[in-house]
Length: 303
Ligand SMILES: C[S@@+](CC[C@H](N)C(=O)[O-])C[C@H]1O[C@@H](n2cnc3c(N)ncnc32)[C@H](O)[C@@H]1O
Image (cartoon, rainbow, N blue to C red; front, side, top):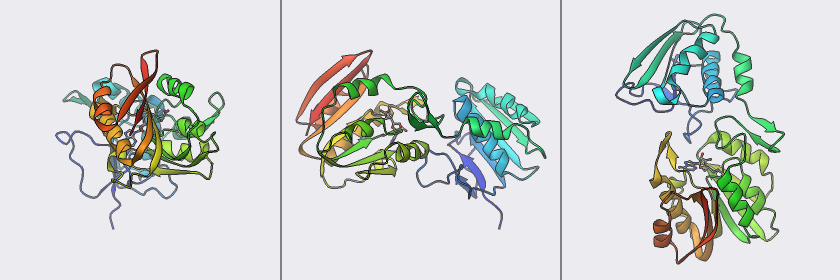
């Protein structure tokens, strides 16, 4: 049987439709293959929409080269404004001969997997999960705010009261909010959801409390579930595929409202410029601003 094509992310279909016989390996695709797993591969070739962060991008390229047979085709592309020009130098540093073509505001790089690539181990180590001494948390390049506390999250942590009962941390990242929530002995359980497999893997290590359950999934597809929660905490995303998407934050607000019991509370932090008051007021009985600083706002919304 021919091995599958390693497919990473979603290149614009006008440039590259998804190849037949491909498997999705982006960590942002629940249900896909974990490229970091020792069981990943072998693959026949690779088509990669390279991520924007340097360490994350170089990890993906190095891992793909590691998993391809000598002479296999690796194609990697990215928009010009999201690291497109950095792909070819990264591949050359791995000892690859690279063609680098501009097309439709992207750079498209092709190479054949060399017999003896250089520097793969260093790139794999630089992009790997690690226990960050400053944060005191497990983290990985590419996950949200991977190397510093987020200002919106910090604002929420500063005003969050001790919560009680059953709850959820939607878009949990590496688990910063859930860790504080679990400081309250009155919390009986908390579900942590994130679409990023790497973030969920870090959250599992950062939140080892038996009351916590981590889920790699899309909050928009959580299913209606029973309205059984007493609280939700969240710093909702407003980027999808690297572009601002305010509908994503609104979908989080609606998902929280669906899961909360009457009287349950949703603590939300968001950039002040995001128009969340209207969707919060539409989905909740009461919306109380609780803090505002540094361009962020925290709301407590009561179902
Ligand atoms: C603004 S970050 C907040 C992370 C964490 N709660 C914190 O405060 O540090 C939003 C998180 O939502 C995740 N996310 C984005 N889209 C998602 C979706 N559709 N379903 C679940 N999680 C999603 C991102 O991976 C990211 O970790």
